[in-house]
Length: 341
Image 1 (tube, rainbow, N blue to C red):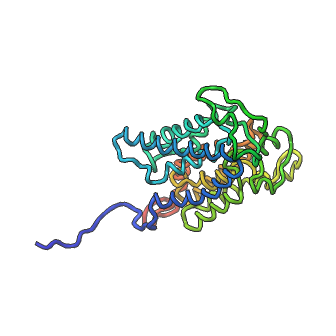
Image 2: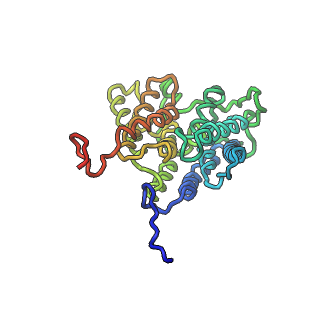
């Protein structure tokens, strides 16, 4: 007996761009390659080892936890690699390797698998791992090395190979970041040094120009919502310009605020995480302005010189409220009383 045509009924979305999760994340890795390469060039072997350990720890942790949950391993979707690279890029180059490994376990285990895996996490996993390391090892997470040292490719700092739970020994080449120098000593940094990564800081603060180019690459492939970094950077620029005009000696100008620290990396590669960002265009603008405002407030008046990490995590926490408050009006719905026509 011949049967009629079969119709498959399912919920939206009914149109698909054709880009799978692993393809999108693979392009994210491609965008991170120049940043990673420059970070290794700038900091040498210690950056290479740090990024390798952080990424390997994330991949291995995800594989083991998937097996313990009797599920097929998900390391082939590139999400663990992206998390590991981003985690490594947010860490100080001279951080002991065992701390980077712990950060990878926390990022995947606490920041991702505990919520149900990829697509269910409420917070950016890499920032979850970094936040725990920041609270557990504050001295190690705030000790920085100068870039472009002459021996960076022939030796590693003593702190890098410190055994677990032992006090790391730091070399004499440690120095303050531009944000710390500005906040505590009122010392500025030339703009070209900030733009091209010629300053102390996290491994991923290597080169703001390369970070922005990576964001443009992803936005052109429609794999990044450009409204988020534009809202974040725009709000920081507007607020810092206003305060700088009021008191130039007290508040850093917009060029410094935009290029210093991890703002570019966070705005382009972390706040734009599709899972932890709002769904609507209005929502992402509110989300971006919220993050940019919190970054400015923390940097100017907070106890820490940097505020990108906490601002993005707080923004992630507000995403369900933003999505609920800014839901688009359903087709046919009246504005006045909400009754459907």
